[in-house]
Length: 219
Image 1 (cartoon, rainbow, N blue to C red):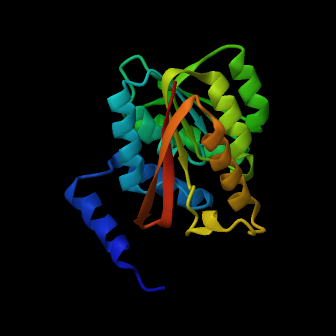
Image 2 (spheres, helix red, strand yellow; image 1 turned 90 degrees about the horizontal axis):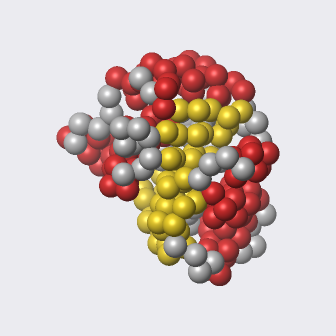
């Protein structure tokens, strides 16, 4: 398929802004070698996560959906000196690859990977920890459940980010039979009703196509 202008722009900005490094490049290469799906955030989006975490001064990060750890490494690069990340991954194969990637990038001591269904891991975390930065990027049908747990786990002032919320504009289609689209729509409806979160949506185009983030702050 012929590349679109925004894909060329992404490549231009990635190069000119010197986005990426050996650890991130190695993570993508290892993911490909291990056969993981190429659904990581793009380099420019990953850098956005780094900068947002750094702006927040994030100390306790929760990531729901690890895949091969690319976004985990981006978040780790934005941590405070004593910061920690807990990342949840359903697939043992993905978690094993992420562990390799995170260690190669130099963040093994700052990242704890919990393997298994996130909806089983989140109640365990609720008994032990709270977080000031939460990134939701897992199976979209469960996004409404992840939001409810995020509210329980977030400290006041926590940053909340959810990825893949536009889905080529399909978020507008209330008749969609795609459970991912319906999961996002329910997620947005919950945010509409939820007074504890002040949120906005950012539509994105680039090497990952047309999609977007929801960003919010928990009061």
